[in-house]
Length: 248
Ligand code: SF4
Image 1 (cartoon, rainbow, N blue to C red):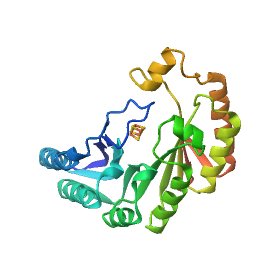
Image 2: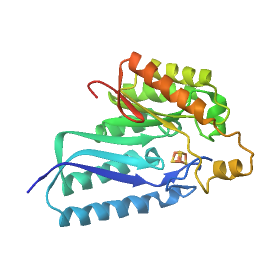
Image 3: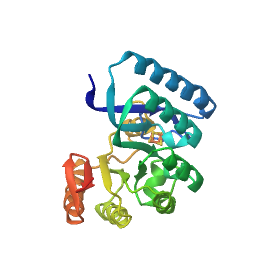
Protein backbone atom coordinates (compact mmCIF):
# COMPACT_ATOMS: atom_id res chain seq x y z
CA UNK A 1 0.00 0.00 0.00
CA UNK A 2 1.24 3.51 -0.78
CA UNK A 3 0.84 6.16 1.92
CA UNK A 4 -0.33 9.45 0.41
CA UNK A 5 1.37 12.77 1.06
CA UNK A 6 4.33 11.84 3.20
CA UNK A 7 6.79 14.57 4.21
CA UNK A 8 10.41 14.11 5.22
CA UNK A 9 12.37 16.43 7.49
CA UNK A 10 16.18 16.23 7.51
CA UNK A 11 18.01 18.08 10.29
CA UNK A 12 21.44 19.59 9.60
CA UNK A 13 22.83 20.58 13.03
CA UNK A 14 25.75 22.79 12.01
CA UNK A 15 26.18 26.59 12.03
CA UNK A 16 29.13 28.89 11.47
CA UNK A 17 28.26 30.82 14.61
CA UNK A 18 25.77 30.25 17.41
CA UNK A 19 23.37 33.23 17.47
CA UNK A 20 22.72 34.66 20.94
CA UNK A 21 18.94 34.01 20.90
CA UNK A 22 18.98 30.51 19.39
CA UNK A 23 18.17 27.32 21.30
CA UNK A 24 17.97 24.98 18.28
CA UNK A 25 19.86 21.71 18.18
CA UNK A 26 22.91 23.03 16.33
CA UNK A 27 26.68 23.26 16.83
CA UNK A 28 29.20 25.87 15.72
CA UNK A 29 32.78 25.10 14.73
CA UNK A 30 32.16 21.41 13.99
CA UNK A 31 32.08 21.55 10.20
CA UNK A 32 34.73 18.78 10.13
CA UNK A 33 31.97 16.37 11.21
CA UNK A 34 29.71 17.19 8.22
CA UNK A 35 30.99 14.37 5.91
CA UNK A 36 30.48 11.73 8.64
CA UNK A 37 27.04 13.18 9.44
CA UNK A 38 26.01 13.05 5.77
CA UNK A 39 27.11 9.41 5.57
CA UNK A 40 25.14 8.62 8.75
CA UNK A 41 22.05 10.28 7.23
CA UNK A 42 22.40 8.19 4.08
CA UNK A 43 22.74 5.01 6.17
CA UNK A 44 19.59 5.92 8.11
CA UNK A 45 17.62 6.76 4.95
CA UNK A 46 18.53 3.34 3.51
CA UNK A 47 17.67 1.63 6.82
CA UNK A 48 14.25 3.34 7.09
CA UNK A 49 13.54 2.93 3.37
CA UNK A 50 13.98 -0.84 3.60
CA UNK A 51 11.68 -1.16 6.60
CA UNK A 52 8.70 1.04 5.73
CA UNK A 53 5.76 0.64 3.38
CA UNK A 54 6.11 2.46 0.10
CA UNK A 55 5.72 6.18 0.73
CA UNK A 56 4.70 8.89 -1.72
CA UNK A 57 6.93 11.79 -0.70
CA UNK A 58 5.57 15.22 -1.66
CA UNK A 59 7.76 17.45 0.50
CA UNK A 60 11.32 17.23 1.78
CA UNK A 61 12.62 19.92 4.11
CA UNK A 62 16.28 20.36 5.08
CA UNK A 63 16.22 22.42 8.30
CA UNK A 64 18.80 23.31 10.88
CA UNK A 65 21.14 24.59 11.86
CA UNK A 66 22.34 25.87 8.54
CA UNK A 67 21.72 23.31 5.79
CA UNK A 68 23.40 25.62 3.26
CA UNK A 69 26.74 24.68 4.87
CA UNK A 70 26.51 21.36 3.00
CA UNK A 71 28.15 21.23 -0.41
CA UNK A 72 26.16 20.56 -3.59
CA UNK A 73 27.61 17.01 -3.91
CA UNK A 74 26.56 16.31 -0.30
CA UNK A 75 22.95 17.38 -1.07
CA UNK A 76 23.13 15.33 -4.23
CA UNK A 77 24.13 12.16 -2.42
CA UNK A 78 21.40 12.61 0.26
CA UNK A 79 18.76 13.21 -2.44
CA UNK A 80 19.93 10.17 -4.42
CA UNK A 81 19.55 8.04 -1.27
CA UNK A 82 16.06 9.49 -0.65
CA UNK A 83 14.93 8.90 -4.23
CA UNK A 84 16.09 5.30 -4.17
CA UNK A 85 14.50 4.63 -0.74
CA UNK A 86 11.15 6.38 -1.35
CA UNK A 87 8.83 7.32 -4.23
CA UNK A 88 8.67 11.05 -4.93
CA UNK A 89 5.58 12.72 -6.43
CA UNK A 90 6.25 14.44 -9.77
CA UNK A 91 5.79 17.89 -8.21
CA UNK A 92 7.59 17.19 -4.91
CA UNK A 93 8.69 20.36 -3.11
CA UNK A 94 12.27 20.07 -1.85
CA UNK A 95 13.30 22.96 0.42
CA UNK A 96 16.44 23.98 2.21
CA UNK A 97 16.93 26.57 4.90
CA UNK A 98 19.83 28.83 4.03
CA UNK A 99 21.78 31.52 5.76
CA UNK A 100 22.17 34.35 3.20
CA UNK A 101 25.86 34.59 4.15
CA UNK A 102 26.66 30.99 3.18
CA UNK A 103 25.65 30.72 -0.48
CA UNK A 104 27.36 31.33 -3.83
CA UNK A 105 26.05 31.34 -7.43
CA UNK A 106 27.95 28.08 -8.09
CA UNK A 107 26.40 26.35 -5.09
CA UNK A 108 22.86 27.54 -5.86
CA UNK A 109 23.15 26.52 -9.52
CA UNK A 110 24.38 23.07 -8.50
CA UNK A 111 21.74 22.43 -5.81
CA UNK A 112 18.96 23.62 -8.15
CA UNK A 113 20.19 21.04 -10.67
CA UNK A 114 20.12 18.32 -8.01
CA UNK A 115 16.35 18.89 -7.61
CA UNK A 116 16.07 21.35 -4.71
CA UNK A 117 13.34 23.78 -5.79
CA UNK A 118 12.65 26.00 -2.77
CA UNK A 119 14.89 28.06 -0.46
CA UNK A 120 14.00 29.55 2.89
CA UNK A 121 16.41 32.36 3.78
CA UNK A 122 16.85 33.29 7.45
CA UNK A 123 16.73 37.09 7.05
CA UNK A 124 15.29 38.12 10.47
CA UNK A 125 15.55 41.90 9.91
CA UNK A 126 16.53 44.51 7.34
CA UNK A 127 18.04 46.71 10.04
CA UNK A 128 21.83 46.56 10.48
CA UNK A 129 21.77 47.20 14.24
CA UNK A 130 19.09 44.55 14.82
CA UNK A 131 21.04 41.98 12.79
CA UNK A 132 24.18 42.80 14.77
CA UNK A 133 22.32 42.42 18.07
CA UNK A 134 21.01 39.00 16.95
CA UNK A 135 24.65 38.11 16.10
CA UNK A 136 23.71 37.19 12.55
CA UNK A 137 26.65 36.86 10.15
CA UNK A 138 24.89 38.65 7.26
CA UNK A 139 23.71 42.18 6.52
CA UNK A 140 20.71 43.17 4.39
CA UNK A 141 22.82 43.76 1.27
CA UNK A 142 23.81 40.09 1.48
CA UNK A 143 20.10 39.22 1.55
CA UNK A 144 19.41 41.28 -1.61
CA UNK A 145 22.35 39.52 -3.30
CA UNK A 146 21.19 36.08 -2.10
CA UNK A 147 17.64 36.58 -3.43
CA UNK A 148 18.93 37.77 -6.79
CA UNK A 149 21.43 34.88 -7.00
CA UNK A 150 18.66 32.38 -6.16
CA UNK A 151 16.37 33.83 -8.85
CA UNK A 152 19.19 33.61 -11.43
CA UNK A 153 19.78 29.97 -10.44
CA UNK A 154 16.12 29.22 -11.27
CA UNK A 155 14.46 29.23 -7.84
CA UNK A 156 10.88 30.47 -8.28
CA UNK A 157 9.78 29.60 -4.76
CA UNK A 158 11.47 31.56 -1.94
CA UNK A 159 10.63 32.10 1.71
CA UNK A 160 12.09 34.91 3.81
CA UNK A 161 12.06 34.40 7.60
CA UNK A 162 11.68 37.37 9.97
CA UNK A 163 11.74 37.96 13.73
CA UNK A 164 9.89 40.81 15.44
CA UNK A 165 9.59 42.02 19.03
CA UNK A 166 13.34 42.49 19.27
CA UNK A 167 14.83 44.45 22.19
CA UNK A 168 14.77 48.16 21.32
CA UNK A 169 13.02 47.50 18.00
CA UNK A 170 10.59 50.26 17.05
CA UNK A 171 7.36 49.92 15.07
CA UNK A 172 8.98 52.13 12.41
CA UNK A 173 11.99 49.82 11.99
CA UNK A 174 9.67 46.78 11.72
CA UNK A 175 7.60 48.61 9.09
CA UNK A 176 10.79 49.32 7.12
CA UNK A 177 11.83 45.66 7.36
CA UNK A 178 8.44 44.51 6.04
CA UNK A 179 8.56 47.01 3.16
CA UNK A 180 12.08 45.88 2.19
CA UNK A 181 11.05 42.23 2.32
CA UNK A 182 7.95 42.81 0.17
CA UNK A 183 10.12 44.72 -2.33
CA UNK A 184 12.07 41.47 -2.86
CA UNK A 185 8.81 39.68 -3.93
CA UNK A 186 9.26 36.38 -2.08
CA UNK A 187 6.51 33.80 -2.59
CA UNK A 188 6.32 33.16 1.16
CA UNK A 189 7.07 35.15 4.34
CA UNK A 190 7.36 33.83 7.91
CA UNK A 191 7.39 36.20 10.89
CA UNK A 192 8.00 34.91 14.40
CA UNK A 193 7.94 36.81 17.69
CA UNK A 194 11.25 36.65 19.54
CA UNK A 195 11.09 34.32 22.52
CA UNK A 196 13.76 34.48 25.20
CA UNK A 197 14.86 30.88 25.67
CA UNK A 198 16.37 29.47 28.84
CA UNK A 199 20.08 28.60 28.43
CA UNK A 200 20.76 31.08 25.63
CA UNK A 201 22.88 34.25 26.06
CA UNK A 202 19.69 36.31 25.44
CA UNK A 203 17.95 34.38 28.24
CA UNK A 204 20.89 34.94 30.64
CA UNK A 205 21.30 38.63 29.79
CA UNK A 206 17.61 39.29 30.23
CA UNK A 207 17.47 37.50 33.62
CA UNK A 208 20.29 39.81 34.79
CA UNK A 209 18.39 42.84 33.49
CA UNK A 210 21.06 43.49 30.85
CA UNK A 211 18.77 43.14 27.84
CA UNK A 212 15.99 45.65 27.30
CA UNK A 213 13.03 43.27 27.18
CA UNK A 214 10.76 43.43 24.16
CA UNK A 215 7.48 45.11 25.12
CA UNK A 216 4.67 42.54 24.55
CA UNK A 217 2.13 45.25 23.60
CA UNK A 218 4.51 46.66 21.01
CA UNK A 219 5.20 43.15 19.69
CA UNK A 220 1.42 42.63 19.34
CA UNK A 221 1.16 45.91 17.44
CA UNK A 222 3.95 44.69 15.11
CA UNK A 223 2.06 41.46 14.47
CA UNK A 224 -1.17 43.33 13.68
CA UNK A 225 0.70 45.65 11.35
CA UNK A 226 2.25 42.65 9.53
CA UNK A 227 -1.23 41.13 9.10
CA UNK A 228 -2.62 44.28 7.48
CA UNK A 229 0.46 45.18 5.47
CA UNK A 230 1.15 41.73 4.04
CA UNK A 231 -2.50 41.18 3.15
CA UNK A 232 -2.55 44.55 1.35
CA UNK A 233 0.49 43.37 -0.60
CA UNK A 234 -1.12 40.16 -1.84
CA UNK A 235 -0.05 37.65 0.83
CA UNK A 236 -2.56 35.22 2.32
CA UNK A 237 -2.26 34.77 6.10
CA UNK A 238 -2.78 31.02 6.12
CA UNK A 239 -1.20 30.16 9.49
CA UNK A 240 -0.32 32.14 12.65
CA UNK A 241 3.22 33.06 11.58
CA UNK A 242 3.10 32.38 7.84
CA UNK A 243 1.97 34.28 4.76
CA UNK A 244 2.07 33.15 1.11
CA UNK A 245 1.12 34.32 -2.35
CA UNK A 246 -2.19 32.66 -3.26
CA UNK A 247 -0.82 29.99 -5.61
CA UNK A 248 1.90 29.00 -3.09
S1 SF4 B 1 21.96 30.50 12.09
FE1 SF4 B 1 19.88 29.86 12.77
S2 SF4 B 1 20.09 27.79 13.61
FE2 SF4 B 1 22.18 28.69 13.45
S3 SF4 B 1 22.57 29.53 15.48
FE3 SF4 B 1 21.74 31.21 14.20
S4 SF4 B 1 19.50 31.14 14.57
FE4 SF4 B 1 20.35 29.19 15.32
